[in-house]
Image (tube, rainbow, N blue to C red):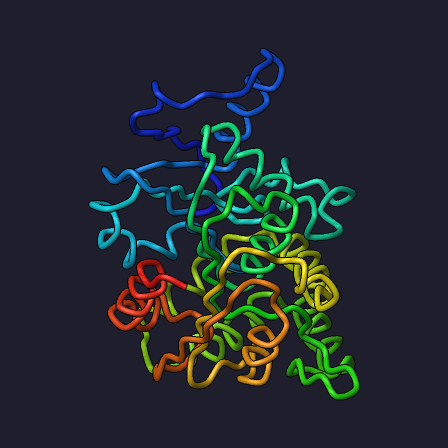
Length: 294
C-alpha cells in the first residue's frame, strides 16, 4: 500500500541516545517517525540496510531474518519511497544526493549508532559512499549492491546509458507512468521471477509519479566519480551477471577507484535487485562480505 501511518519500532531503544540538546532530540525522533525507522535483532553489531530507487525497506524482507541473530539491523525508507508521506519530500532540498546523506546520518545519530556496517542498494550505495566520506569513523564496511557513480557514458567511461536514452526514459515516465512501470519492472528484475516483478512493480506504483521522475533525474544526473578516492572504509561491490542498469565495467571501475580496500563479489544471478529475485544467493554473498576481514 502507499503511504500510511506506521508505528515506530526501535527495539532496546532505552539504551540509545538522541543527541545532546532537546531540539536535536526532537528533530531526531521526528525523522525516525517520518522515515519509518526500525531497529530489530539481537546482535551487538549494527547493520544498516538502505534500499534503492523504486523500492522501500520491504525489499529486504527475504534477507532480514538471516541477520537478526548476529546484528541489530537498522531499516528505514528513503524520503522518496511510496510509504513515506509525500508531503515530506521537499523538491528544493532533494536536488542532490547530499540531502539523503543528511537523512541517513541524522537517523544514525538519533539512534545513537557510532559504528556500523552499511549495505546500500543502487542509489543508496552512493548515499553510503558520501556518508562514509563525511563521517569515516562511523562506517566499518560498505557493501555496495548494483552501485554506479555515474549512469551516463562519458568518453572512455561506460556507465551504460547515452543522454538521449535517458531522456527517452524520462519522457516515458512523464507520459504514462503506469505503462512505464509495467515495462521497466521486468527489465530491472531481469530474472524470470514473477513474484519479484510484482513486488518491484508494487513499490514503484506506490511512489507518486512526479516524485519518481524527479528522483530519477537526480540519480541519472549525478556523477560521483571524482570523490570515490576519498572513501577510506573497506568496500565490497556486489554485481550480478546481467544488470540492465549497471554494466560489469562499472563494478570494475568502482573496484579500481574506491579509496578503501575493495573487493568485488560476482553473483551468477541476473537483474538489478538480487535481494528480491535471488535472496538465497544474495544472503550467502552478503554474509561472506560482512564477515570476511579485508
